[in-house]
Length: 103
Image (cartoon, rainbow, N blue to C red; front, side, top):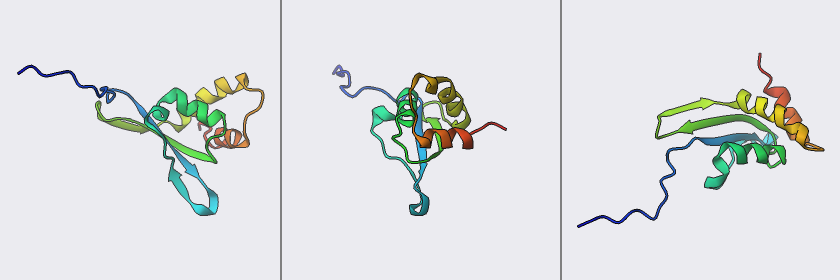
């Protein structure tokens, strides 16, 4: 019997980005987000719009390709290039850029 194509999109072939947010005395948490919010451009936009309290680490992974890595410095570099497009940026963005400076 022929098999029908799946109605579920195969979106496993992409990179996923997660942000570790620091809530001070409440601790740190990997922020919950919907699937669409885990791509690079949405995550950067959310950081620039102040959606994170105090982002301290960003990891990317791709389960189909079998890799994961800390991309904090890479994202900080990209944000440095893009934040001039904004009239104002939240203090959380400035703190993130200061902490994520490459050595």
